[in-house]
Amino acid sequence: METNLLDKFQGCLLGVAIGDTLGHPFEGKLRSKIYTYFDDFEEFVKKNKYIFRTYTDDTQLTLHLSEALIKGNGFNLDYIIREFVNWLDDPPIGPGYGCISSIRKLKYGVKWEQAASNSGGNGTTMRIAPIGLFYNKDIKALKTAAIKSSIITHSHPAASAGAIVIARAIAFLLEKTPEIGFSTEEFFDVIINSISNSQDDIWEEFIEILNKLKINLDMPIESGLIKFSQAGVKSPYFIEQYLGQAFVHPYTISTVVCSIFIFLKRLSSFKECIFELATAGGDSDTVGAIGGSLAGAYFGLQKIPLDLIKVVKKNNKIMKTSELLYNAFRKRFI
Ligand SMILES: [Mg+2]
Image 1 (cartoon, rainbow, N blue to C red):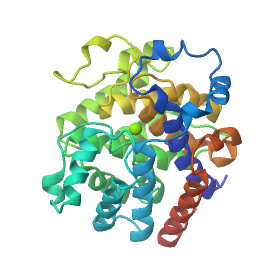
Image 2 (cartoon, helix red, strand yellow):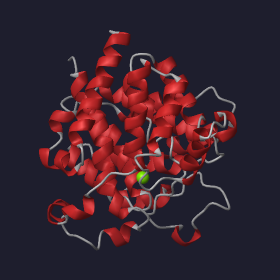
Image 3 (cartoon, helix red, strand yellow):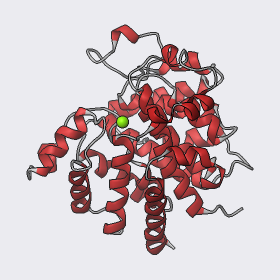
Image 4 (tube, rainbow, N blue to C red):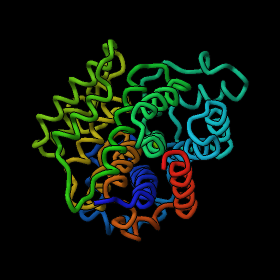
């Protein structure tokens, strides 16, 4: 069955924005705390619209990266740097240190090789969806673009590996439909393959953790999050007080693994999936954004309830950007 790719492009970028918007109020909170605020999350969102009034840096940078791909007809370093610098005028909402420090340097003309921070934070993966979309038919170019788009701001190997894994997962999910479903085995093969054949220790470790996730998929969400919340995090970066609790660390590997875990556990509907992602605990907005990109690419726009689209500010602009990105993709690949 042919999937409607425009619907999937729109679903994916809106998925980022919805997950980010719903997760933002819970950023930095323990999952056990978050679940004391409501019995029914849907009701809670309806009654507390003012809490969910904006998305954050995750969506902002995703939109800027989309703009750069549209204007540059694909990956073009100058356009990407220009768009990242433009983000400083948005202004940034809840940015990570790795991102903002390097982009400020880019603004003042420092070359990206010197500007990039050594952060392994999830800041490059949270903005990667447009690369997964645009290069979905050319996996080699997808990997190259994912790496290049990461190292401009984050030189740590975990940051580029996370970006590849999520971009590759999006390309995989564009070809699937909820009516038919997909094999989890195949999903893991594809994403693990995307970062295989590297000599890098961190990439190897990432593969080990993904394999561990694969065999622990039947764990309940809460226990799985406790297990993987700080996966791959090294001393002194542990958040000691939250070890053994569900609090997703902003390190790339832990965030990506927890996002994938929740996504795979909640495939029954977009709504269920995004609610679970946005209330993960810890870096909830980014788990919402990354997991939301997967859920949106899988379910597509038609399966996203209107109420959830309306939660997102400037949702029309996101719809339009997705359409322009889709047109640029068509022009280049079809
Ligand atoms: Mg954020």
